[in-house]
Image 1 (tube, rainbow, N blue to C red):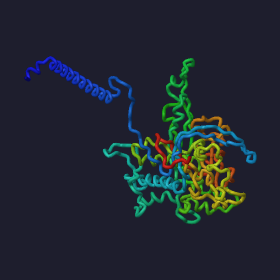
Image 2: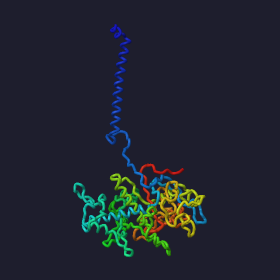
Image 3: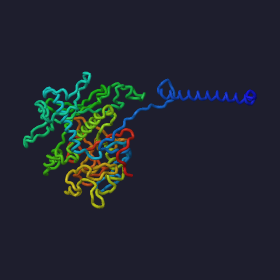
Image 4: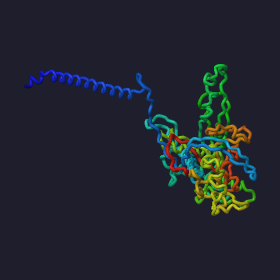
Length: 500
């Protein structure tokens, strides 16, 4: 019976079709397997013998949220006054600009934060001297060799604590060398003349310009013009200390030799000028502020003043280096702290609103209940109506819609932007910035930098966010401070949201 079924023509046809289907199924499966395997291999061998262009991946640096900073999202604003003000003599002259995202300190830099900078400089000097043979030569305080004994670039050992308590005779001399005895009061105090900070900064903008390339064929792309033959002439800033401890600053002008010609060296005395309270106000009794404003802990949370544009830049450089050191190898990816450009400052102060002359929406510096929005001079001779006679502790008044405090009043703030009467016409409308690194020999008027925000001593009109003023870069005032910014890396989210 079985043989009869197997020999039936219809059964044999079904058998042949079944074997054919199985054969094609196996071929299909093998083809799919080989295709997937080949695709997998091709995916793993980017940049190999050939294939589709799929791009190069990579791990991105996860930028930590900077302490005490707010993320200001990219945006645009019409810089300058939006309307005429005939009473104040203000002419409308708005200019549309756009700025990319950046982090900004939510308050002005305080005495407490600036003291950390001053004390770091003090401690670095002490460590240098503890390693100096003239003060006993303890090599532990300065590292000159790696673990294998190979010579490396000498650097201070910050893991070794300074022996503040129970120092030996040499250590005590090293520590006491940065202090002095006040000849009038007999008090022991830091010697501010020694507190000098040396740093280097690379001018990327100048280095990137085509006119400054060493290869003459890459300086001019227009083939109708002859290839330049002269070397570019560069100017770089340098500084050094004399044997007497004086800071000598020079601007060197010479033919370009290499990348190091764009590396500028600065030495800045970092101690604030505490005498500004007397020098800014003739015939006024401000001696207590001179004695206490920077040194007394009660003023720790007040904005630092008596700091020049040059000192503010030195602080930003130190702050960058201080953070990068803690991040190890990933520190190189962190954008540097810096002063804000004028455009960044105005965009942040006005919270991106071109109609607001102030960091708040109202046209007056107070609400309907008479509560002030800022620390300024409400009336002639009346500094205290807003609750303060000079500066106030940072963050005393409400923040603007970006979460920034004291963008009007309290202290005016340095920007990175150089001042000239036509600065608005010189700058781009994309991340505008006018930079001029004045040489020592330049006329003094070329050393002006833009200051924004107004201060505790200004009337309401002068704390507007759409007006600019200026000060000389080496000047120190009782009403000028600063805050830092840092360009955003990637698309990280801020800690505070903007109000709609």
